[in-house]
Amino acid sequence: SSSIPLFSGKLLDSGCGSMPYRNLILSNSAVTNYIGLDIESGLNYEDTKPDYLWDGKKMPFDDATFEVVISTEVLEHVSDPNAYLTEVKRVLKPGGLFFFTVPFLMSLHEVPHDYYRYTPFALENIFNKVGFTDIKVKPMGGYNAAMGQMLGLWVNMYLWGRKKKIMRIIAKPIIAYLYKNDKPPVNFKKSTMIVGLAGTVIKPIL
Image 1: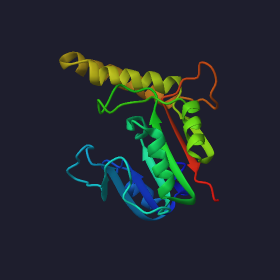
Image 2: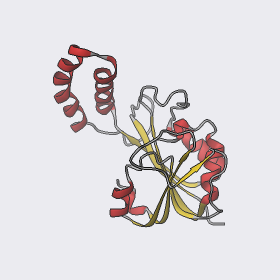
Image 3: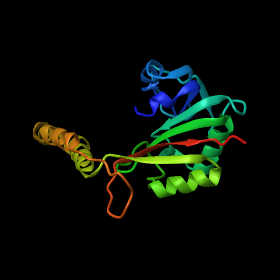
Image 4: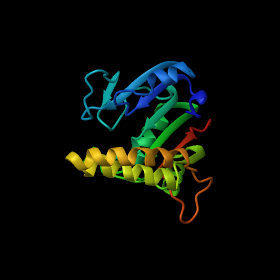
């Protein structure tokens, strides 16, 4: 949410799914046009349809179309991140901003299209190779949030029946306590725990 005020102009939500952040962004930014794009073989949502579909190779937009592109929890599902980010860079205007989030501590999901768990160093390396500048990568969640997330996943995805019902009651206040008292790391060093990563990069003005 701290990045939303940076958004303005024409925005592309790439890998938009059901566009859960559309109203939040339009209500709290200078975005004038919000466009959703998703892969042709992506998940189907009954209530919300993407504005555009694409084949995963070339986005159906001209060069330098958008001031902002966002991809939330998308990059881990992209088999060729260099090619994808090159397309993102192509459709961004010079000086345009790309915002992203990725999970680090998460169970397999959307299989078999769950390819990567990125470290901050891997992301910086990829963005540099593609030619983005002003690379800023921030941690989401520390040790407490990691424990809370794992406990929640264990209860909701591993347990069944009566055990699940009982453990949900027991785990709920523990998870709430862990998240409330979480302190995300301030930098990336050995033994740092993260739940996920978020950040921004800029397409350079040539």
